Length: 200
Image (tube, rainbow, N blue to C red; front, side, top):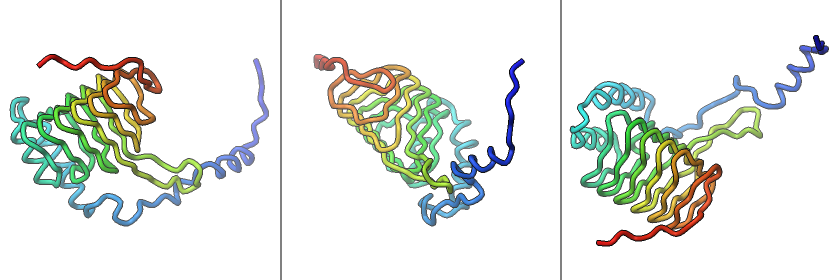
């Protein structure tokens, strides 16, 4: 059996150089609403929103608007969708947000008209500064262009834009902007061919 000498003091010294979570603080105004309002939304989301029947799209649009989201006409949001801060979300006309999609809206999220975000995708606008011991929280916006399609189980990183009419293949990871009208896939996702326009 291999044996290793372990020096607890050395390990603790190295750890203190990486992150010290006891010094973490959420910046003032970061959430965009008071803490009580955030908690109220989370309560509403886990009850009135999540328990609503599938067909009650108008009810869920109303709840999102009530809590500050900008929601266009004909938007379809499934009851299992989770939105951290709806007041930082804009859903343009006739876009679809599928089952179990996570809108981690620490920063702004904008989904364009007629765009689709498929089931179990994760739009992540938040991160942390790994180079600072306080593990400072950060946020950067995500934009999904009009008529784009984000496939199943796609991760979209903070600060990225998916171009108009682009397609992102299932289980891809988007860490950089993707061009308009291209089919993209992989981790990291990259464009590999142009998208054909449907005949009208």
